[in-house]
Image: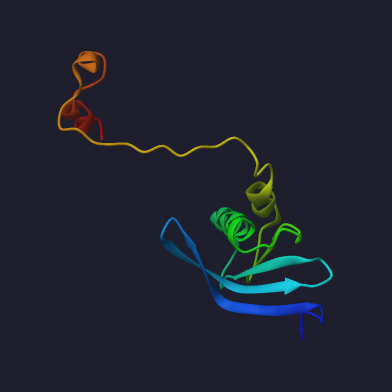
Length: 128
């Protein structure tokens, strides 16, 4: 009731499964007036920029797997002990910027087309 009478509690440590991996939202509510899921993440210390990415991930998963078709997009709240306004602003500003993730693999030797162009591993070790 502390949040208001329009909030329905859906769970704490609410389990989401994405690509066969489990993730847990600290608190999940549904707001009847907003017709939206409300995810709340609880943090003990100061706000960190990586919290925004995690919350964005949770909201996307909720919208994909939990939200019903007639409901509005999910809303996220991060409750933390302290925050720096500029850090929060930068963490959430332009969150729709084009970004990507790449994978890499290691090899014990440099491919022939790169030999002579890139430094040898021993040279890199010396620089470090």
